Length: 535
Image (cartoon, rainbow, N blue to C red; front, side):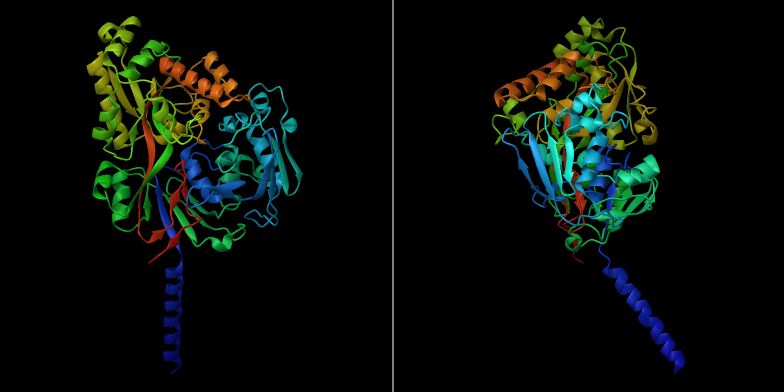
């Protein structure tokens, strides 16, 4: 009898353990690469934001329908002149370690982004809108402590802008405006983001495990202000670069959500409930190294820009119906300033168009008729079959239209993206693969990333006139004048061409039907806060 009782107890424990395991609400999410940075202050990459949007919350956040709703803030007021915002924070906010989170944390964090000693690559997001921000970070004529970002008390944050900006609240939901804990940063330095024990955050999830080049595991944060509404226990980010591998894992039920989709996957899941696609305010482009000859000549850069057939690149090479060829520097999804019901691109039309004849003429004027004497150059990119195919197609188009020779060279991601010493940062390229998702839905966001106000952008494009234009955008002015500035900036870029826009981003993903409520914001960042699991 005793033996039977022992066996029965063992079986009961096993059944209970299985039931608990089955009850765990877990989502496995694939993304192409490990985040380059897990520090909200320093991150300027989409891959980082993909993770950080699960771990942190700013003053506002995105609701399931894409609208902005209060997060850490409870409400805000704006001064009559539209320049000073006063935020009232919720009471009882906590960090993931259980310590209090206050307005002082936001003051510290925003000032940290603008501290030139920290050197944040995303500082332009703040100095483009906060009063004296540029003078602090770029000109270094204003001290960080003197910036008009002040915690009036534990629950009140006040900030003064350079100019009225209706999109400012949108910015408070972006990565750069998220808080970090001062005590943790000061104790561990940049290492605070490298292991779960020191990683303190304030979002719906917190870090449980970090396996380099393999996966990150996040678990529900019990100290999140509305933790009871979060129904997912675990989100595992799995890093798989190859679309074929990711699709196979999805087909086998090993991964719930896949974001790296090749043409085969798109075709296989076309018109099925598993394929989700939404607009995204970003674009794929290629950077010139404007210091290297002959790419220091804008005629050469424009010639290469005009000689590409983007319809073929998108529809025949990539074969992704969610993408849209782009002929300008402001992507689709941005509202027009004077006609906000319409898209900027639809109102303005193309800033340039494919024109082989003009491209040949420009190259001849630059001293290379029919490509004669033009040195062999290369496109560098991170390993990917799709990216390689596009680069090969671009090379063939330039050979056919202009008579010039371009090689394609894959560079391992860690080397390509490394700060300071990487392929792009060190300028070890003629043309480099790149892309960007704008931080806010307004034309100026597309220009800020090319401004090079600090003189260290990867393009090495030195154009004081463009920097001055971008600086002027930060002043208060009527909408008509602002629209004119934006048009002037795009016209200048269409002549100078420091980068080659190729196509507009879209956020496409395969989503297992067991996952309900999965959304992505206009930046393409995933949101698991509103998800549920339906078995």
